[in-house]
Amino acid sequence: MSYLVIIAVVVILCYLFKQKKLFANPSKRLLISDVQKAKDILNSSGLDSRVKSNQNLGLTFGISNPFTNSDRPYHQDFRKIIVKSIDLNDGEWNRIKNITLKAVNDYSNLDKGGIVEIVPWIQQITLNVVLCGYLGMNVNVDKVINIAPGIINDLWLKSKELNHTKENIEKIMKTKSKLKNLFRSVASEASETPNVIKKISEIARKHFPNVFCSEATNNSLADDLESPLNILIPAYETMWRVVLYSILEIKVRPSLKKDYDNKELNFKEIDDAVKTFLKKPNHSTLKNDSSILWCIIQETLRLYPPTRHIHRVDEKNNTVTIDVEKIHRDPENWGEDATFFKPKRFFNKMNKAHIPFSYGKLKCVAADKFAPTLAAILISAILDRVDDIILGQKTKESLFLKANLPFENNRRAFDKFEVTLTRKS
Image 1 (cartoon, rainbow, N blue to C red):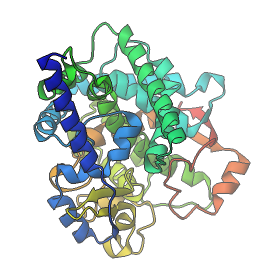
Image 2 (image 1 turned 30 degrees about the vertical axis):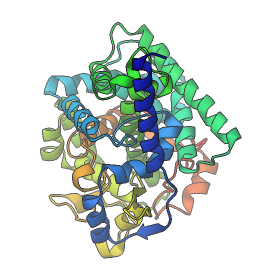
Image 3 (image 1 turned 45 degrees about the vertical axis):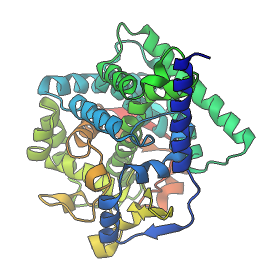
């Protein structure tokens, strides 16, 4: 064995030992539902604390990004690249809008009766826009879009309920490999690698050179560091759920009761806001000229936080779970109408108890501008193209008892939820 090989093996073993140490079993589990305590914990917790709590996510998806990798210089460079990639000009936002409108047309089945399952429909549109709009994939991505959302959803559930039996781990590895191969297949057809993926690969090689040297033996670690899922999962996962629940509240809830009367949802006001926003889709328009859209997005994030619980591991190796959903629905924070969808509570003001993207130095970099603007484009494109979402009688009856309460906020809540879409005239 050459001298270089010995060095490479030692470096990899040290890296793996560090990861194993981070993944030690926690001694206690603490649940936090007080907003100030939650903010104090989030503000003081560091990268190691977040990575320890995300060990299952890294294993399940085979990713190595700042959610699962505790290397600080790598985290800093990764963050810089993402911040630059989401700082879009008006022309880039307009391009994403056009891609989104086309995706809504392509996946809404309006020429064949408009019958769709609502969750896959939203997922397909969102994934198309993330791949073609944000990442800039210049190939046909349908073979990914028709399969990947279901796999991602399945893996995400497994990451939360990870059972470390040999049989279960083997199933996860097989499913994970299938997902990665899907994206490799599409990437191989592209004329060039999307710039943000290329940049992430460059910093991975910069910070972990021994993992990529010719003598390296741990190919799986190199594969995780260069996986496009490092970017795709954070960009796609939150987004499709925000879009789903916004559309459910705007289009589905009114059909559940004949006497539905939400004075906050003026549908002409929403239509006007959509038209205004789509003429110039950017963050400035969203905040200034189409504030009802901004309010709808913030209220969706409040009532249906995509990350219902934020986990940290403290210095005593205790798992601290921040119950975001409970904080967001607590009458002490939001008033007696806390469980109702009332977007105008966000007109010209925010609330200290609003933490859908975490808080402090590890708050999501896309939280303030990119994520709300992309969500507004997706929601606006659907509202611009789809006039009505009609429920079947059985579906309507099953939802009727929830007409005045939040919809179920979990990944299986709307499985096989079939609706009929009608075209906007």
